[in-house]
Image (cartoon, rainbow, N blue to C red; front, side, top):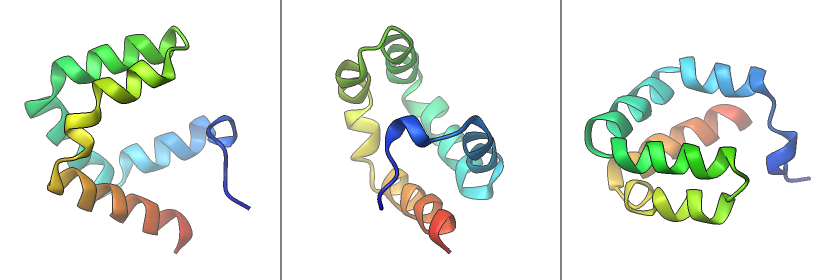
Amino acid sequence: MEKKYQDFSMQEAMRLAQSDAGQQLLRLLQSGHGDAARSAMENAQNGNIAQAQKALQAFLSDPQAQALLRQLQEGQHG
């Protein structure tokens, strides 16, 4: 069964953020997409998930970001 957004725990988030791929992803996000990240966080905190996703769309389409996201996803299932 696929996990839903609500099932994602803070413990899982911290584990992913501390992984090598997570650290690389954060650096990539901060280096070139800082404004988008801030906008996405503000929107997410206000419950505007669709707007948060839209703010990160350019970042998420970056090939390097996609590769790192795949590494994180494989790490969860591996």
